[in-house]
Image 1 (cartoon, helix red, strand yellow):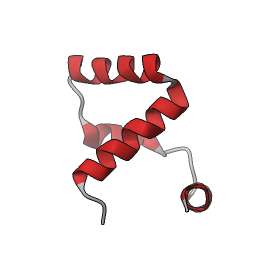
Image 2 (cartoon, rainbow, N blue to C red):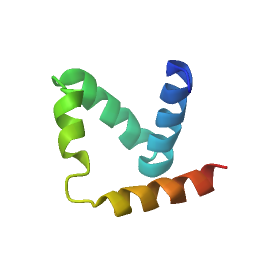
Image 3 (cartoon, rainbow, N blue to C red):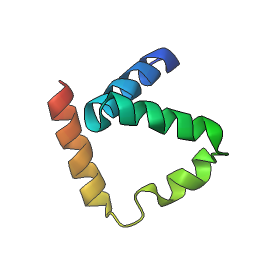
Image 4 (cartoon, rainbow, N blue to C red):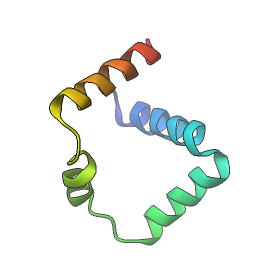
Length: 66
């Protein structure tokens, strides 16, 4: 299991790679400024995806990171 530090570091890198440094920084600013309920966000995160789609994405991600 990854430590909190590893998860934060990897998450930050992924956001910067996906959004660019400026947009990732803006994202973090928005998160800190607004009340954020992680549980509610998580409930709707993949509501339109089937279990198979989620599994396929996870497998593709794992292949890319190993």
